[in-house]
Length: 74
Length: 301
Image (tube, rainbow over all chains, first blue to last red; front, side, top):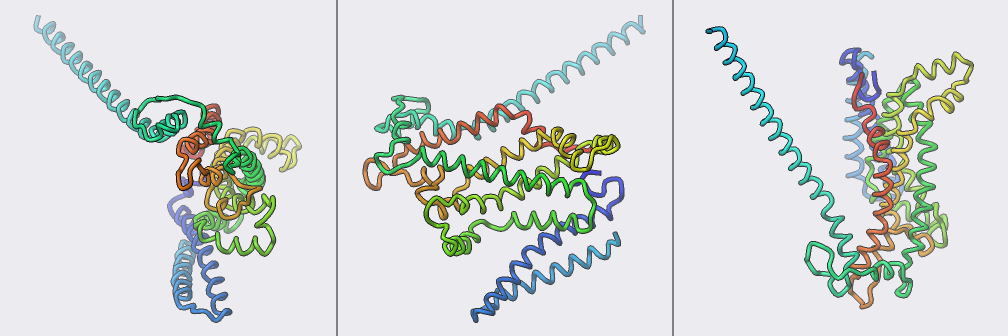
């Protein structure tokens, strides 16, 4: 089993779990960036509505991915 | 008699089928070569035009003759001339320094990171891969303003501060090296490492003495890719370089001609040729290693 064909020979569930892990990492980076930006804007007293909405969407996506990852049972 | 006739008919049919297949193969081969020729011309045409213009007299810059005419080497002399405030020679040295340091650091860190990702089993391994991928997806232009602010506060925006170019370059080269090396190392025969361990090597020694020499094609490919990415980088270099650290891409973009507001195209093309040729020679010499390194992980046994 190679690193970039995860799950070959062990069924699709492990492959799905690993793909979701990668997605979780990508979303995590962008969520962290959006969180930092929102906090900085709030602390400076600048308008943070757009940034907060983006953070909300990213948090939702991360949460949904995490739930899907947990439901794989791997 | 009847049997003989039937055999002859079968033979003729078989010959006909074989001839049809031969013609079909020939047609497929011709189509393949035509396709390849189109691709090669498509890829090389801009480079060919750059070289032709580089060797053309400045008075014939916009001559559209497709082969070299009014050939001269003056443009190369102009590219290296410092009379008009261009510092192409110095920029070449700066680019080499920045490229070599970036590649060395990215490789050093990348080898260990990719070894861990390819070899070790730990929770969240694929999350780490995702984080690396996510970080590499971050657009470079979004980093320019905050980095400019940071480097200004640190006093890196004047003098010969190569680190202002090397550190951001490493952040772009590192995901590339980690991904390429991880794909390569994941396909290595790890039984050899196990054998070395049984023979008394520590894990570090087994990696250094057995696995690292075997991974040479992958390491070499990755180093070349990292160097090329650093060598061709323009956005950050344009913002963070000073006169003392200016890279070739920036130097070429800022070339000044004999007349104000007149772009010295022939000198720019000569400089472009000088910058590109070493990369092409390097890739041609090591193309076998590059291809084997890039295709590692593509086929599973």
